[in-house]
Image (cartoon, rainbow, N blue to C red; front, side, top):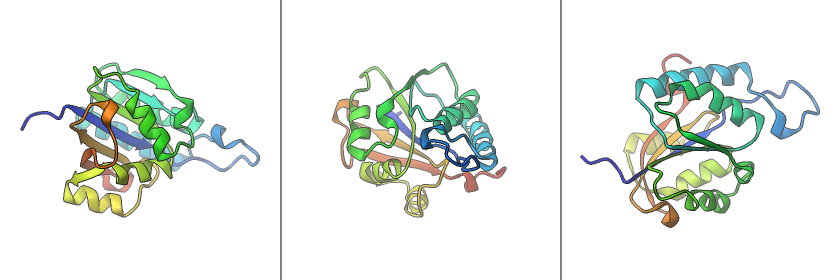
Length: 176
């Protein structure tokens, strides 16, 4: 089997803390449960030799902390961009971000928020691994990680553009 032309990963930030009342939403840090999920994902990424060329991350504190925690498990040295548009993004805005990706990028990791990520994942599915699709249909929890194979150029990504290759939830990992 040949490698897909492009690979898109969607990582919803890990569980955030609500411990500090009055803290603006974008400044909420990860909760202890979120930090445990990030560690499990880091180990999962290392074990699966996850490689990405570009990371586009929401600038919120919890997404930055999620990236910082999983980054040591990602192979290579991806370029990292913090993009305001990803924070609280709609599906249309997320598709706009994806369509702007340089054609030379083979693998993209988006790190952001629900409800946009869950709706985007369902929007992209054309075909899917059955078990991955069943997990996705069960909901997109914090630290949920979807992987899509995309045959179209980034500039042409739209509804039904992807094959859902995998969907990992923290509870799927042995060490959470």
